[in-house]
Structure formats: C-alpha cells, structure tokens
Amino acid sequence: MIFHRVRYILQKCLIVMFLAVFPLLTVHADMDPEDKKLDESLNYKQDVVSLMDKSVVVKPGVKFRYLSPEDAEKVLVDGWGNPPTSPDEPSLLGMIVPADTSPFDDKGWGAELFFESDSYISDEDANSIDYDLILKDMKKSNIEENKVRERHGYEALHLIGWAEPPHYDPSSHTIYWALRLHSKDSGEFINYYIRNLGRYGVFNINIIASAEQLPTIKKEASNLLKIVSFAEGHRYQDRRFWDTTSTYTLGALVAGGAAVAAKKVGMLGLVILFVKKFFVVIIAAFAVLAKFLFGRKKS
Image 1 (cartoon, one colour):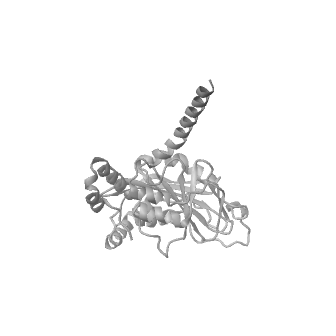
Image 2 (cartoon, helix red, strand yellow):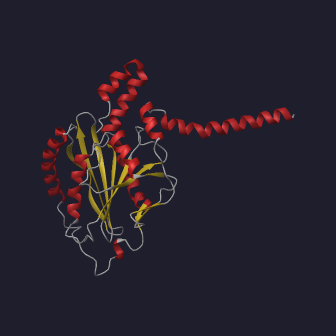
Image 3 (spheres, one colour):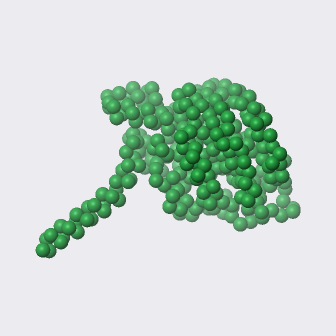
C-alpha cells in the first residue's frame, strides 16, 4: 500500500516537472543552435527598473521582460541583422519583449526604448498636421536613404505607406503611428512608433514586427505605456512656466520616425531565421550552405 502511494506521488511529480519544463522547450524548439545560444546569453529582467536617473520607470510585470542596452543591441545586431546604433542616434535604453516567446522565435517581437531630450514639446498642432504631406516627403527621402543603406552593404527598405495613420491621444500625451515597409528578401513588415511626451523631452518606443503581427502590436501598444512611464516630476503635466519649450513639433516627430525605419532592417533578421530553420529541419547536410546563403549580416 505504501509502495503504490509512493509510486503515485512520484508519477504526479514527474507530470508536474514535465508541464513546467515543456513550455520552456517550446519557446526554443524552432531556434537553431546559434540563436538558442544567443537567447541563453541574454539577461531577461521582470523586476522594476529605473532609467535615466530614475526619471523613467519600467515595470515589465509577468507578461513582458526587459533587456539592458547591451542585450538589446545583441538582439538588434547579432539576432536580427540590423546596423549597430550609431553615435548620432539617441542612446538605446533597452528593449521590452514578450515573456512567453523569445525575440528569435518567428512569433517574437521587440520594442526598442529611447529618450530624446528636446525639452517640452507643445501638442497644440496635433489636429492641424497634414500627415499625408509628411508621408510624401518621407517617400522622397526614402530613395536617398536606400542609397546609403546599399552603400554600406544593407538591403534597401521601401516605404509603402501608413500601416496605422498618426493619431494623438491627449489624455496620455502620446502619438502613435505605424509604417508599412517592404524589402526584396523579407517581403512586407511594419515599424510601429509610440512617442510619449514628457516635461524634458520625448520617450520613444519603436516596435519591430511582421505585418501579420500588427493586430497584436496595436493591442499591446497602450499596455506598453503602463510598463514604461515617466516618474512624477518628469511627466508632461508636471511642466512649470519656467521650463524651456522646444521648437520641435508633433509632425517633426512623425517625420523623424522615417529616418529610424531607414536604418532598421525590422523583421528581415526573423525572416532569414525562418529560412535557416527550414533548411536545418529538412536536411542537416546543407547547414553550411544555408548559413552562407541566408546567414544574418553582422557588422
């Protein structure tokens, strides 16, 4: 009787252990060894993190994870094949990724975090901006930006149009928009932008995802502002009359997003990752050839 009881308990323990381990295995199941190794090198955090001398607070919670600037750069450059962050760009403050999948999984996505200290930006022009005119100018600039990309060995990214037209939320002092982009190898993808106005500048959240993930990103966009927020004293509504007002406008924020899109490959790295996984599964003998043909571009 005791023996059967012990065996029953052991069986239950094994089932619990299996259920606990299996979800972790499924996260990495589609990854090749190189990506799995890179993923395991990342230090994911779910505790509260303070950035920029405690002026910005990140609260990942249970649904998201935070990556430091160093780990975020690994994802962007080594994992997704983007050019490194250049000195003339705002400093990368980290990245937010979903807790239930790896950024290297074909369902993974990530939100880059930046801050631009442009002082207090007025939102008085929010309802009077001609965003269609801005889009035309962005498409013209895109032609020249692609020449620069190709000169540095990166694939041209073609701006198609809005995936989500710019819209301003006065209650949170945030402007949202998304661009549809296309490249020869990766097809269509999106760059989703969130600009949260603060007392001393703008907090930038740039989300890189596939076109199919747009509904998910739209749903999560407002949640990201609950995760990443200005601390008290640094919020838009905390402005004092003596604070400096920037000459920058909301329209300029949107136009500036095109320059970011021109630099970032977006989902190209993930598409290449999918192709690599396909070849690894079909026949291991072609691993070297697949890496040569479809390997990620590194700087």
